[in-house]
Length: 298
Figure 1 (cartoon, rainbow, N blue to C red):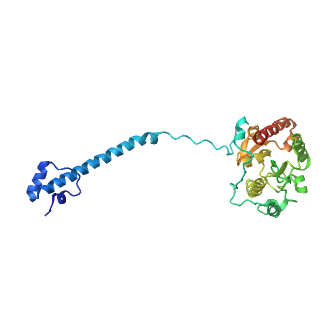
Figure 2 (figure 1 turned 120 degrees about the horizontal axis):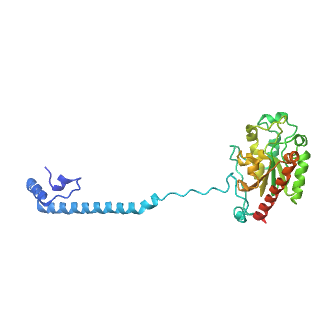
Figure 3 (figure 1 turned 45 degrees about the vertical axis):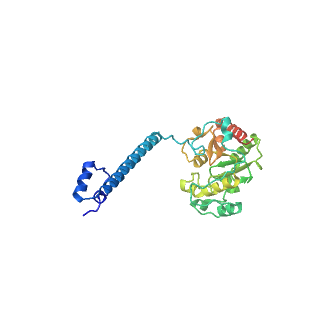
């Protein structure tokens, strides 16, 4: 038999009516003070429950507008490889001359080579793909390791393979004239390399796998030189760095970015020799590069 009404009603949150309390007291012969205490306890519990529910309702009303507000789309990162608008006076706010450019190898799991001796030694003895079987020399570089301007071509020509330097022969002579016309010193202001360091056999292009296997050397070169601006020569170099398949005609006359480095796309000198009327467009690309460099760093 229960000793108090609390024992009868434990766990319940309802408030008994006076007649119910009286019936319970008479049935179990419980004292009146115990009934009054129970009534007070149940009343307080009921009140606290109402306050709690009211508080939750107020919080829900406060938060609902914020939760229901549509999210705004995140702005596109200016460092992506998608084409950028034409150069403007605000471009200097994107990169400051004092900023340190750090290149990451996002295309392979290999660690970037952080010194020139190791890079040359590794590339010279590289057998990552079948291109090494046909090469005369590994074509790594020419120019200044501290250059602010970096020119990146596609792959070595026959002249490059024989001399072990990029952009030789008639194409190289034309490129040197273009650089001189920009009033840049070929020995001090410029660094030249290719996306692939060995010449493919015959006249074929390197495969995607061959470009991929060679990519760590190029990324290491960019990281070591830390150029202020990159100019790609030809569609293959541009599409490889920008990870696009867009035609070169649609990539030109825009300021692209490769990991925070402004990148200008222009024709390969070999294309200019075959199609002379493209020279005017190439010169416009170089003028855009000069304008971009001046607005960023001068």
